[in-house]
Image (tube, rainbow, N blue to C red; front, side, top):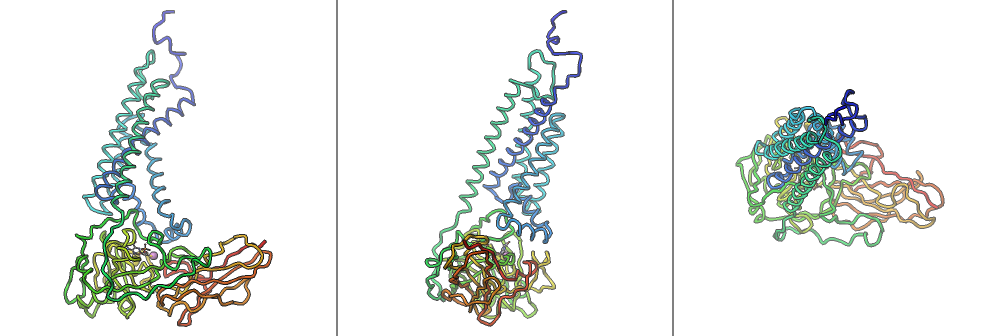
Length: 533
Ligand SMILES: Nc1nc2c(c(=O)[nH]1)N[C@H]1C(S)=C(S)[C@@H](COP(=O)(O)O)O[C@H]1N2
Ligand SMILES: [Mo]
């Protein structure tokens, strides 16, 4: 038999189909090429977004759109399941879905490059649409970069895989197969190089975002109306208790954003309009020149479950809200303060409550520093006694005096309450649920709050469903601030339940009636089991 090159192909008469394991490896390789191309596109886009508008990064734009479209019950479920990690899980899920589709695009590209590239472009088009809905047309740039980089990368890898496969000596031309052996190694090296490039670009994007979202160091003026001296808390005395004042870096953060907004205080302005005698616009410097009040106030999120993490006490510095409203002159039809952040997100606040004499302010300082970017720099609203979602607008740029009939804010559109005073509540900080404790004296401790209800007068502890016993109280800062408490418990061996409740200065006892956070805040009594051995 003559030995032509084609004769070296094993069993030339049979189907050229490679063995099953080869086919799986081939598919996996192509899926991987799709994933690498997509990662490179996302990373390049992330870098471009980092230097322009961080939130226009395709994954974040899609994530924000998902947040806005998620029905309230599902959102509530996610917060219950994942707590403060909900956003990491959201972004992670978006990335996962994108990467699965990227793998599909790679496999399609093996058959026809245009099919795979088309799927990638369709994916990016979705992100671009989200970026435009979330931001503006100027935020299309990162998506464009993602499309160009991703498709170019897929095209290059496709060419390499096809070319090396065809160049295999003695092999029939198989342009649709990533070759085997040496040729496959070439493709893997190329893909590895692109993956490394993606890591570098993505890392650079992260680094730049980190630099840009660093907090601003501004010397703040002294308050015209300072807070009372701050007492020593129980934290040195009761192990595991929450500090009386929460450091800025530890303060809970709740908002709809996946980025940390970077706002330049020199171009920032605050406008007061709507039903007012004269519309006014103030700069950051204008605020610094006004009389400032300084107050210790405990903020609470409506999504905080009983015993949850979304509550914190801090010292706020700002301009009295009523001073600003008086400058504009509020008309007599308004019943709602409708505030807007730099990105168009809106929050409603009942006008009568915000102006009833409580220390509502437009804050520019938190615990002796300018507001951290995560907490609203350059300015935010703070209204003691109301949950944050109807009072604490961060990155605020506009205050519109209007009516609830006329305008509805972000959470109002999602069926949350418009009038939601913070409920009297307490949290057991120590011991932890299911903790094992030694027989004898154990200290139970925590914090309680009753803003605008006369502050916390008493906390009581109940062991195994027995009688309520008064706890020892930490210092009282003011009626809008939380209060630490502890109870010395002589524990006997066995399993026990520990519960705590607060009683406010105006005589409100924390209700045992259980309510979920939606639509106006959780209630009930925190009870946990411990084992004493
Ligand atoms: N612009 C803007 N402001 C916002 C929010 C938001 O999503 N966007 N979330 C509100 C909610 S629900 C709460 S509880 C407080 C939380 O403020 P913090 O993150 O500083 O603790 O901010 C409020 N202000
Ligand atoms: Mo909130």
